[in-house]
Length: 122
Length: 366
Image 1 (cartoon, chains in turn red, purple):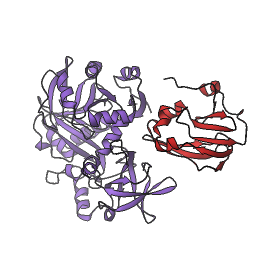
Image 2 (spheres, rainbow over the protein chains, first blue to last red):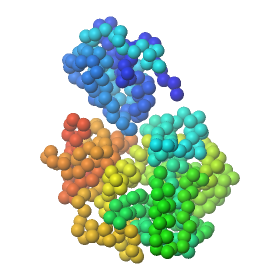
Image 3 (tube, rainbow over the protein chains, first blue to last red):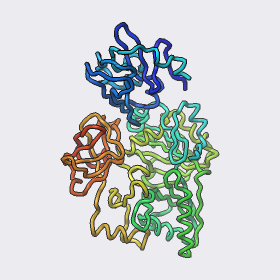
Image 4 (cartoon, each protein chain N blue to C red):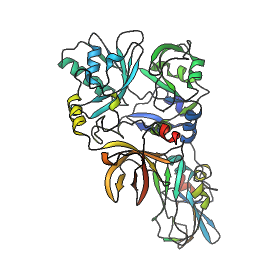
């Protein structure tokens, strides 16, 4: 099965994607990650205003099959939490790069050290 | 661990199934989504490839005695074409495996179905016991040459009936008979592991594709949905809800007293179970209805006022009821329906209620 890896995003080895959107970055999990997890039933996300260092756990995704942590792709502060996926976590399965996004952060770092689409596909 | 591929592996791969290793077999875990497959079985019908399950045949003049010595239910109550659920114990009364035993409808002897990867162990156990006690039997592991599919759901009867040479309408639950599907002679049994009506169909492994394809218009289901379905029905999973090494449990702890017949002649584990019956068990299985949006998974602590009173063995979000449900063992004084307890789920404590573990029945009644 081939998974969608959009060319306009950055990626982590722990299967988060990062999109630069003006002053903030938007974060979700990749198509591959959602498929591995299977039917996602709950998601726990951080409070707005919480600050994290790169690699720290910022949330939990629970599928029928397994539970998985979500990690901060870079250091920064949470500015928006996607309330939609808290109430309808199935969007993470159905639209991981669209309505299934999870948080927006003001990043302390640039994104250049993250994986490129080609590196993530590899 | 080396991995067996079921005869239908290529067929499943072409269908786009995701696979998982289960009991040494590379089996489809899902074809679509667990929710979709689960709902198909609850609302209509679904088909599972369960060729990973073991098949052991027992025949010969002492077959009935041997089966009765090594399983807990009374084999003498079976007539040709009957089946029953039973346990296989060690001398301490610990469950080594659970199984369904079928008495052949048309010839002497039995076939029983141990869990995946257990066939050879059971053949050895049966053969050794027969040799030690001078019983004349033939015991064979037929797993690799047998295909098995399960067609389950309220529409299973109609679907199976539409592809069999002889009608299956009005066939009793827990009975089996010969029938033909797509030109293949099958043993068709009205048994299953989902809490729904349904059939399990045995056939030569080489004919697997023909039988599977006869059900082409039915939702294929993987082990993921099989697990959520069986948990809702309160049915135990070997290796998780009991395991001779990691989760050693007797039938009395596991809520399986109904398959232990103390009145029949001596069987392995009987004495230990008799002592346990008189002395009482330290823990017993209960159902848990979790009150928050979190899944209580295997190994999580069940607590009362911060004190551990038991542990979860299986948990999931119930697709049917949309609430998290779990099975676990707790101290008997807490095994009271309606009692409020809690489960430690990662870094938080979540309230839960003790309920009848047959969730499908008990939650539907509320």
